[in-house]
Length: 119
Image (cartoon, rainbow, N blue to C red):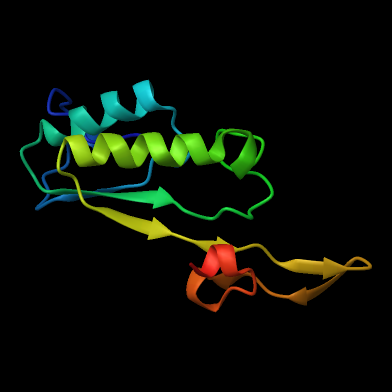
């Protein structure tokens, strides 16, 4: 959940790079925007990987997709649009269990059983 910092003089946040891919899953709008701006200060291209898994049972930073996850997702997309930062979507379907047994493994979004995740 850390990002590069142009003021840092040591540790990985001070590494030189051609660009950055960040994944600030579940970060609420204000914290997300602050970290995104710090990354943009490097002057390098940035891509944000946004959490796009609506049926995941424990959404990062929220109890569920419906109880805050969707608003975090929407806020992050809006902030990225305002700074012209491209996004990549991390979208998986959680494993499906019946009677304590896994009947479907974790699946990437395009292979998900749930049509909401697939879309």
